[in-house]
Image 1 (cartoon, rainbow, N blue to C red):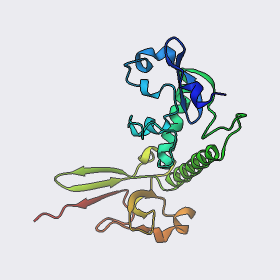
Image 2: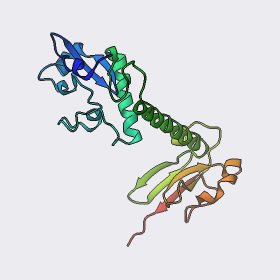
Image 3: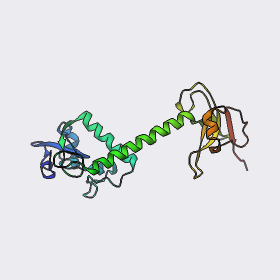
Amino acid sequence: MFTISELERYTNLENGLYLSILGQVFDVTKGEKHYGSGGSYHAFTGRDASLAFITGEFDEQGLTDDISSLSMQQVKALNDWVQFYKTNYIYKGKLYGRYYNQNGSPTAEFYKIQEKLLLLKKEKALEEAQNRMFPPCNVEWNLDIGTVFWCTERSGGIDRDWVGVPRMFFETTQGSSRCTCVKLDSKEYEENKARFKEYDGCNKYATKCILRMNKT
């Protein structure tokens, strides 16, 4: 366990170059070129400046371990940095403060981060499941004819044993939509029929649809 004042000593080659990210302390001395005096990331040493890993702001307000202003996607990006340090540098311990208490147990702030990461993971799993049910169309814009949507057995980068037909898929009630390939005789399509709309001027059963430009 490190206290804030103890960690502050590790900003030079004599003692070592240490930094903390989300309360986990790493020895980054072997990265002297980046973390040593005059290096681009020297400001990270001797403290927990988790917020700055995302914002890139190296003033006193930015060099803080308070990440409450970050979105879930940004928290995920920060957690990726933690994994980077675990892989490339030496883990030395924990910092007593915002994320760990005096005996090294996680604090409420630590669990808030884990909840955000878990929620993001669940959202991603739901999104992937939805994309498997209704894969994105291939899309191409052509100056002469307009936007072309078409479906194949690999459109959207998702392998399957059916092709499907292009449809507008409304993901939310706010009116935003995307082109998806749907299997018209599938249970998934029947259960979500109200969320789909045919493209104007396109054959109902065609695997390719062209939205032609209005030429004035």
